[in-house]
Image (cartoon, rainbow, N blue to C red; front, side):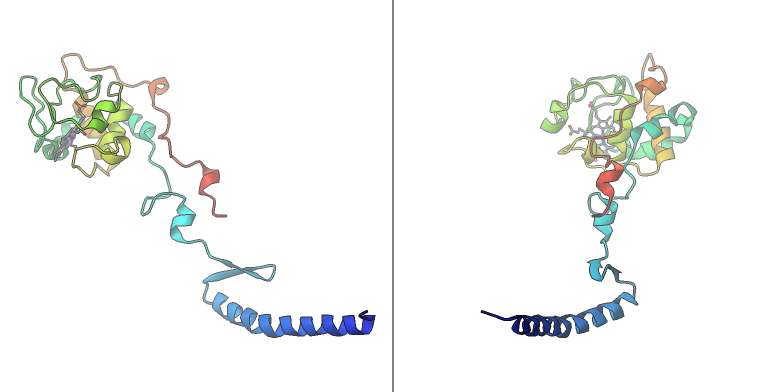
Length: 207
Ligand code: HEC
């Protein structure tokens, strides 16, 4: 049998041991905290969230998810006549005249509203593009030309994307003109839903 005196001796011993173990640790951590690395909450040290955890998205990606609908909304006031310098990059691989043959990439005449991966004289489509069914909408073009590999993972189009959103809108507004019957401007109702993976706020919260 252990009497209560023994018990309190044991308890006291444990307490003393804990103090010896934890006091220096706490002191060190408080010292660290003054450098702004860590946060002490209820006596426990919580590691500061890292950049990636805080952004809740893929490495290096900005915290705000890209929303094609925001650029689609810019299209009616975009300036297709200002697209030339950006579109010159496209012309390294694409033709845009109605009668021209495809080059390293498919001819872009009439691409808006065309089924993806179906330009008849172009044989170089990736499986990824051919299996991404559906016709090119304004929102699709905006997304693809901003982040080709995000919209069509595995695309053969080796192009980093147009990062400046005003330039992007100008180019898509210009592509609209590559047609005998340019598509009507997008209406708000036709604007695409945000991309899947556009992180909802809750998922982006650090734990
Ligand atoms: C380095 C060459 C290259 C550059 C530069 C390039 N593309 Fe492409 N593009 C391709 C290839 C190759 C494909 C076919 C991709 C696939 O099948 O995965 C393609 C596909 C496309 C498609 C889909 C066409 C279809 O028939 O479904 C569009 C739209 C497009 N490119 C637009 C552009 C625009 C606009 C630019 C300039 C901002 C551009 N591309 C720059 C090579 C290029």
